[in-house]
Image 1 (spheres, helix red, strand yellow):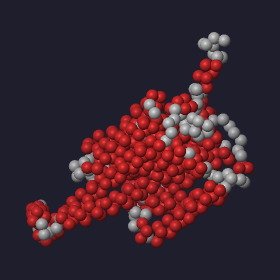
Image 2 (cartoon, helix red, strand yellow):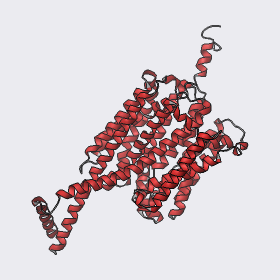
Image 3 (cartoon, rainbow, N blue to C red):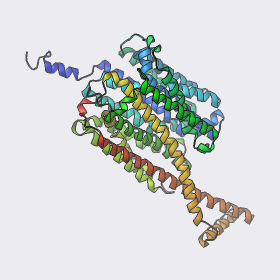
Image 4 (cartoon, rainbow, N blue to C red):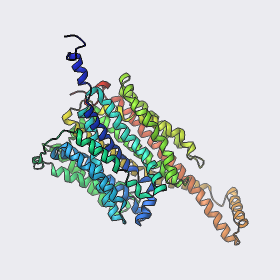
Amino acid sequence: MTLNSPHSPSSAARAADKASLTAWVAVLAGMIGAFMAILNIQITNASLLDIEGGIGTGVDNGAWISTSYLIGEIVVIPLTDYLSRVFSFRRYIIANTILFPLFSIACAFTHDLGSMIVMRGLQGFAGGILIPMALTMVLTKLPKPQQPIGLALFALSVTFAPAIGPTIGGYLTENYGWQTIFFINLPPSIIMAVALAFTLERQPMQLSLLKDGDWAGILTMAIGLSALQTVLEEGNKDDWFASPFIVQLALVAAVFLAAFVAIELTIRKPLINLRLLARRNFGVGVLAQVFVGIALFGTVYILPQYLGQVQRYNAEQIGNVLAWTGLPQLLLIPLVPLLMKRYDPRYIAIAGLSLFAASCFMNTTLSPDTAGDQLWVPNIVRAIGQALVLTPITTITTAGIAPGEAGAASGLSNMLRNLGGAVGTAALGTILTKREQFHSNIIGQSVTIYREEVRQRIVDLTHYFVSHGVSDPAVAQHKALVVLGSAVRRQALIMGFSDTYAILGVLLVVAALSLLITRKVQAAAGAGGAH
């Protein structure tokens, strides 16, 4: 047998190292689903005011438009592995690929807050399934040498979608109305459903697994996570534990989640294999992913808030600024697998986290003059950092995960990363409020009528209003005081935003340092490298 024979051992090995076209089509279709599901977490962010006006609800209640989607998504992600075995992987992912755009379109036809919450929750429940199943397909359908490419595609979905979501949402809202943001899911979903129907192998359902299901774990997890997510989203608005409602929900979350952990650690067939977290690379990798989730979702939350509240940008303008965080990743992330062939994935991830942290520290010097153009460099640095982060971290996390554990590992890591994002967004909202109050008090101690320059400023502003048509000097002086108060609040708000960016930067540095204690993995082994 010659070395060049197609039947030689080396040829067979090379063939085993390459996935078939069918497998790649299935994986790519799965990535479409993950991208759309993650995109829809953020796509309403730049358009919330328009949606709230369209369904006739206030700003406070409008937060539920995002909250309900996140609750549905976070609850279903850890259920996905179990339910995909019950109903078969193919049947389960195709069914939810069809349901996802249907619930999305239903959101566009809602006319009140209640129906919008229900439809967004159902949309999140269907979309949440698509995220871990995409990662599961990378770990089970691609050979180890090609898994870094699949992980790069997954990273592109996870990091590019949040960055570009407000851009798409803002453009569609400003030009075609807020309803259109819920229609864009239909064409990609049709492509995905057709591709999966032709590429995934048929498997029988295992309805007998319903009898042996971890129903106590499912119930306690669903109630606990729903209560926790509601606390996180509503706590800042209701002044946290000053609200009896938040206190009660927090107790419900603590009791049910504690019961869930106890059940999962003692039952013979747990819904989620929490013991995976005891493995060094998986546990540390998931912790790093939680911090990355906080930073990913946190920056996409903070920057639109800053541009809207401080600089008075509209939805489309906010989206255009955020686009500079998303678009460079399209070029950079596909190059990461090539880097991983030459360099230790841990060092690539640490470099990416360091750049991501640096971009946050760049925004700690915000001023009234910091707007779109001044944010260009930090956004580019952030894009480069994000591009280098998720692929190597996922490789590190899933090294040593056997194919049979892929579904459980995918569900657990994705749930905790998204939960990290939810916790981070809520915490940053509270930090922003508290730091604004702190800076307002500090500035207020200096801006008093006992200071000559303050009195002179009030006089100048009063003269300005009198010279511009305000005939009553008392009214002009009142307007001058209002302007001065607004300037103090604006400066305090800017300083509060700077502080939140500093906290994000510190978290990313901690994530980078944590990766130093993980074991080295071979990049070629990709995910699931050692069994």
